[in-house]
Amino acid sequence: MRWFALVIGILLVAVAFTAGTRVSDTREGLIAEVVTLLAGMAGVILLISALSLMRSPSAAVTSTPAVRAAQPPRRRSRNDIWLGTGGIALAIVLLAGLAMSAGFWWSVAGLVLLLPMILGSLYLCVRFLRADP
Image (cartoon, rainbow, N blue to C red; front, top):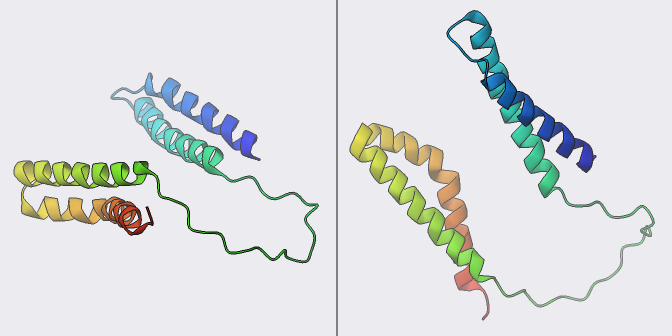
C-alpha cells in the first residue's frame, strides 16, 4: 500500500505539472488550472502519507501482549530546539510582514492560520527544555 501511494502521488504531481503548461485565459485553461491544483494537492498528500507511514507489525505477533519494562525517557535531540525556534522565528517574520503590508486584521487572520505551526514549535521547545540532559 505504501509503494502504491508513492507511485500514485508521483503520477499525480506529474499530471499537475503537465496540466500547468496548458493554463491560459480560455475555458480549457481554467479546467487545466483546476486539474493542476487538485492533482498537485492529491499528489502531495499521497507522497507525504506514503513517506511518513509506519510499517505495520507482522501478522505473526502472539495474541498475548508482552510485558515491557519501563524504558527511561530518551534524550531529546538538538534538532527539536532548532526546529522549534526556527518555526517561531518564521512565524514572527511572516506575521510582522503581514501586519506591515496588509494591516492588523490580516495579521490576526494570519495568526489564526499559523497557530498550529506556532503551537507545534512551542511544543518542540518545551519538550527539549523539560527533557533530562
